[in-house]
Length: 278
Ligand SMILES: C[S@@+](CC[C@H](N)C(=O)[O-])C[C@H]1O[C@@H](n2cnc3c(N)ncnc32)[C@H](O)[C@@H]1O
Ligand SMILES: O=[N+]([O-])c1ccc2c(c1)CN[C@@H](CO)C2
Image 1 (cartoon, rainbow, N blue to C red):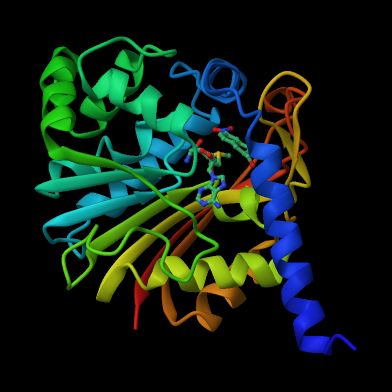
Image 2: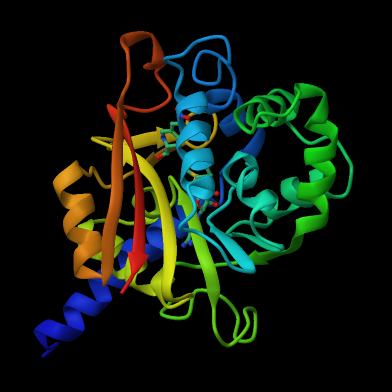
């Protein structure tokens, strides 16, 4: 007779395995097209989502309470915007993703190639936020390429998400993770476990910058590929951070205007959380 706890563990594993199978069809180029081109990435619009995210990250990295040597991005995907501010603050940046197709996309750009998206407008926008002329975008690209030392496989559902020895014994000084945990977890319990797992990568007192979807139940990971998302609200985000040993420093929320709802998901809002590991 299977014990309740054994059944529960089996259910947990089945949900995570099903999610991993779903991700095998993930299409980086399509994902970038859906989420990182206008209207969601329109640098002429003050109410576009991507400029809002870049402003949150710029402010968080430059307001004076974050420092250290090593920044790690969790579930980087095929995107680089997450570390365009952080690469000026940290000597070393490590990117991570579950899928080889995404790690390859990142390595192509990092190697000087042009990937599936032109990141120049992003680099120019972050340069403006930093008070530099947008012609400094190429300098920032060089800075980013030199700061990123590794692009590693990761699985946030493992108690040890990275291979042993991937990080220094003291761990990362700062983690950033965007639209990952809720997009890879079958339910809130799995989301909380994954948050606890990535916390083990961060040193005590280190910061976590978490961007995620609010009220989202699915998104398109490629043409016709619906990927389930665990719907979160602000209260759940705060509770999950507290339950996994973080002190919330700041929480900001962006509510999507109607024309940002373009049919590639059912997200209603985006949260930005800055938290510190106690
Ligand atoms: C919605 S995308 C987010 C991509 C990017 N961070 C962004 O801000 O757009 C979710 C990412 O999680 C990755 N992923 C899927 N399963 C994962 C797992 N078990 N552990 C870590 N990352 C995973 C996917 O490969 C994908 O790149
Ligand atoms: O508007 N955006 O900048 C944006 C970027 C990425 C993602 C979303 C929205 C919403 N869906 C998530 C996947 O759960 C991925």
